Length: 164
Image 1: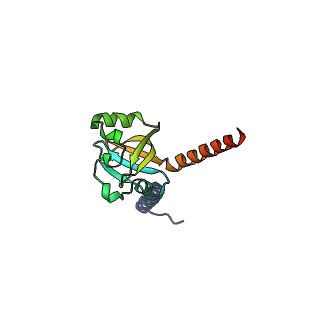
Image 2: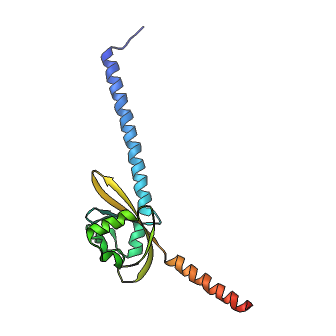
Image 3: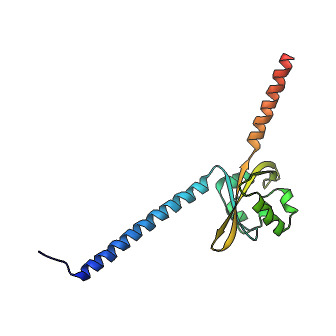
């Protein structure tokens, strides 16, 4: 009966372990790539800011809501995107405010790059990444919802007028 020397067994185990680690890394990279793809194409606006209120990233939906592309706002202060009531807050009170709307939505009127007023719903999700605090803001454009409500109200008024 043939037996392999122990040295070959150790080398085989090391190669096998490296292949296993490489496969795991590959799976993790695919998951990360898929997740980033999801964030990029998510139908909810997402803006990432750091603890100094600088914009780190925005996704395609946020670009559409505000009329800016990511490269135009990268590194700029968040007040370029957010409603006027944010502009009145100091940086520290703004960070406290962001912490307070965590997992609880707040409604505001924001402006796009052309100055058009947009009703938005904002939720803040703080994340500690490499010992630095970041906020992920989810932003929902409420324009269509408000138009739908106005149409419904008009229909109710018309309905009442017919039957009164």
